[in-house]
Length: 160
Image (cartoon, rainbow, N blue to C red):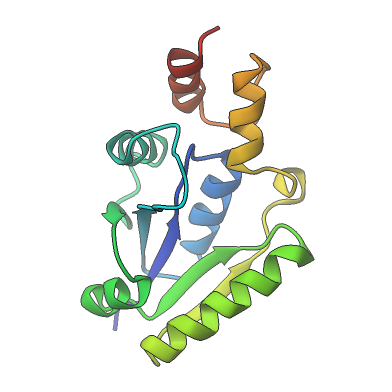
């Protein structure tokens, strides 16, 4: 039986922290579906297609990773893809409250769906997409926070 996990997120933009969680989750799973979510409550910097393209560039060459868009309930998406695990990153204790509520609701909607929480590498614990966007908006150096292709996309979008 193939162990399939979904790692959902907005990835606006994908950071080295996301990449760390995705690559480490491959030690636990046979396949990881990176699901780029449409979030109607957020105004994304990058379009859904741009975020998918960036992830494909960042994760190129890994056959056990699939990147796709997600518009709808995660539990239903997982059911249709025969995934039984959701991967989530926890940076701080404050993340756990929201994430545990989501995990319980997803299990309510799809009882076979478990959530696995991974803590990022220590040097990436503070990292978030919103911080990267803010630094890039203020023309700061994001080269140690994102893949070079993502850094280039941020420069094209926000200027030098």
